[in-house]
Picture (tube, helix red, strand yellow):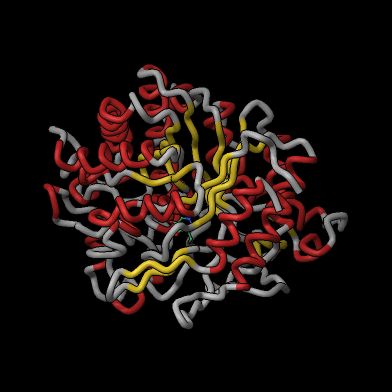
Length: 456
Ligand code: IFM
C-alpha cells in the first residue's frame, strides 16, 4: 500500500501542551494558565507550567524527529509569547524561540507547519471579553502578521486556527476548556469572531506572500448508530435531519464561510435561538471568505446521533435541541473514544466532494492508551493497530479520489491533554515527566518504517 510520491508524513504538537517555560523571556499569561491554576478545572490539578519542557529541549526533540524520519512538524505559536497582552509591541525574545525552532527544523530537513492559534489566548484579551469581543479578531490578524514578518522568509505552510469548534464551544459553551465560560450565546458569538479572525489573518498572510494557508477543524462523519457499521443503512427522515444539523454545527459552521462565504441555515437558526445574529455584521462573510489552500482535518472518532424529540440542547452544542448523542458499539481508547477507522475515509471523501477546490491534509490523528515502560521500551501494540487501521483508510480515501496531501500523527510527544492533564498519553514518544526522559514507543519505530517505505 504505497502513498503518493510527495505525500507529507509528520507529527503535530501545540505550544501550551509541550513548551512549559510559562514565565520565561517575557511570555504573558494565557487563558490556559489561569484556567489550570483555578482548582477543579483540570484532572489531578495539572497545568502546563513545565509540560515537556520543550522550550529548553527543542533541539533534542528535533533530533528525535529526524531519527523518526519526519518530513513535517506541525507546532503552534503561543500568542502570549509574541504579545504578552495580546496587542501592542512585539516581544522579540518570545519570537526568537520560534525563529530558532524553525532554523533547527530546516537544518534537519523537516518542514515547519506553523499554527497561529491553538487555544492559548492572552489573558489580557479574555479580560476584555475574549472571543466574544469582535476586537479580538482584529488583534489576531495583527499578531499573525507579526509572526509572518519574522518567519515568513522560511515558513511556507501556515494555519490560522486549530479547531475553532473546540475553542468556542468547549471554551465558552460547556466550560470544559479555558476560559471556562458556560453560555451558549457567548459560544455562538465566539465561533463567528474566530472565523472573522481567520479571514482577517488569512488575508494578511496572503498579502505577505504565504505560499499555503490552512484552516484546521476537528471534524467527524456524523452518523446514525446503524450507519456506523453499515454505510448503506438508510436513516429515517428525522434521524437524517439530526445528522445534517450536527454536521452543520460541527463542520459546515467553519468550512462553509471560509470556502463559500455562507453560513448553513442550521447555524443561523442556532445563533438565532442563542443570543441572536447581530454579531454577524454586513460584509463579515466576505472578509471570512479568503481563498485557502488546505483544509486540515483532525479526526479521532465519528459523531453518532439520532433524533431525540424533547431533549434539550447539549451545552457544547447550542442548536442541538431534539438530538440524542448516541454511544457507539466499538472498542475505545483511554479517552473512551470509539475506534472507527473507516470514519476517516468516509469523512475525507465527503469533504473532498463538498469542498472540491481545496486540498485536504490529516493534521491530527492518534490515540491515548495506558502505556507502560518495560525494560526501556513501550510496546504500544494498540496504538500501532490504531494508526495502521487509520492509515489504511487514508489510502482508501486517496484511491477514491480525495486530494489528500499528508498525514500528521497526534502527537509527537506525550503531553498536557487539556482538562485531562497528564494522565492521557497520546505521544508516539513516551515522556517521563519527572525526568523529562523521552522513549520512542514501538509505534514511533513502526511509523518511522512506514515513512521510510512511504507506505504500509
Ligand atoms: O490534544 C488535542 C489537541 O490539542 C487538539 N486535538 C485533539 C487532541 C486530543 O484531544
